[in-house]
Length: 194
Image 1 (cartoon, helix red, strand yellow):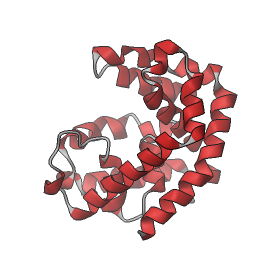
Image 2 (spheres, one colour):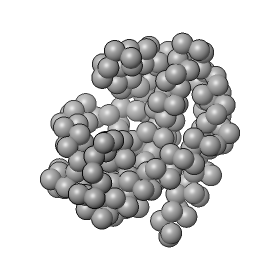
Image 3 (spheres, one colour):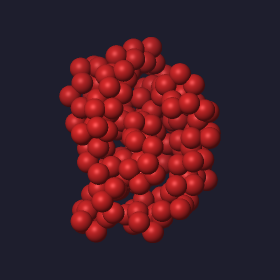
Image 4 (cartoon, helix red, strand yellow):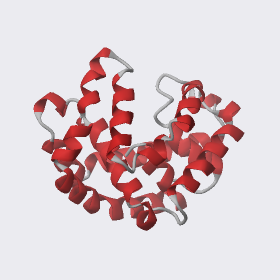
């Protein structure tokens, strides 16, 4: 799952929730230097990723993408699934509108900025200014996210055209997400009590 799903599935405690976001920003970083709740959130993030990667619906989604994009299928499917979550936030969210949830996350990020890993600190200005979490709800937002991701390295350039794949395979990808989501929510709840 991508950022919105990790935040949605995380416990409501701010540092645990932010830790679930940190999971994508700590490669090569000494986790021991982070607050214990951030580390716990990162562990939850990784457990969710492992569950998602093994799920048959996710494997189906990845297999739907043609070979030129297959190398990026994991990233693309994660973003596509965040689209379906954002689009249906009223039903799948935690109560309240998506913009209010995103604003609360942004406020927590600002309040705890000094505790976050440097890569996430660097991402904060554009994460909020470009409203990525809210933008996932529309196809234009997905296009913007994927184009931005494509600029991170020359190898990621194909991501720039990834939104077209969502449009082509929309109904099938939506069905795969619908099969995954309830099982993933149940799994994440079990993580909270563990």
